[in-house]
Image 1: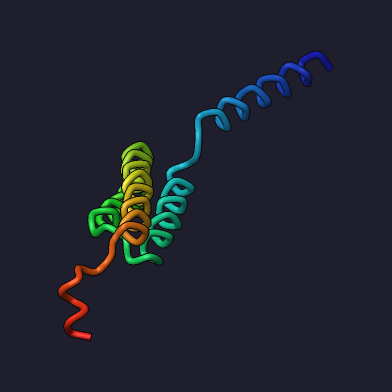
Image 2: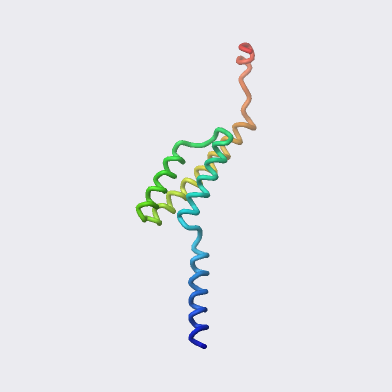
Length: 103
């Protein structure tokens, strides 16, 4: 019986360590894709983010989970910045006065 509890304790510790390690590469890619779609929805997506996502997916297919995770995290940061930039431009940009002559 003690042996059973020892095994359960070890398995519980391992699963807690895995959960604390963060998202998997696939989860990170999916999160980055969702953020890129959010940026695209306000015409703010960056081309480089799509390239990073493609590289992350290729790395995952090849089995390089560490590289896939690193690329996905970089893509996630870029997508967040792209959204912030596009949102700021929408808030602060106004057409120059000379364009009103063409209306």
